[in-house]
Image (tube, rainbow, N blue to C red; front, side, top):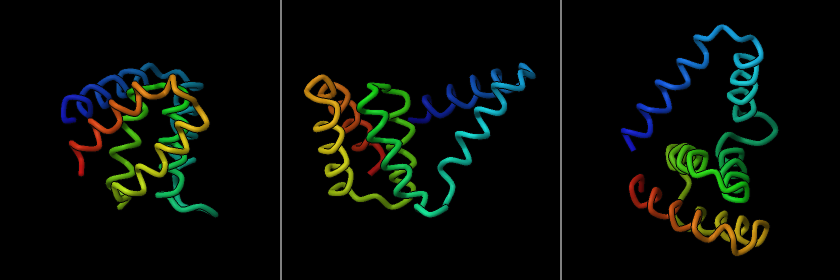
Length: 108
């Protein structure tokens, strides 16, 4: 997980240092979307995790697993969210759920 964090941070910095206004705006919008609002950060991170599984993005899954764990999501709640992702995304999400559980075991 440390390697993931390091790589993500380094590459995000390179993207943001490009000076491209559109990239900076998108990154800011992404960060703001997960702040507390009518829904709390924890709920939004779970939604992000489900969306990431359905879209089959392993980097996004890893990120949201970490964020969810940091925000107090329990193993039982993760499994409930994984079930929603499976129902929405279908059996093609199963390999990504396997990797999500592998990451979950590293953070819980």
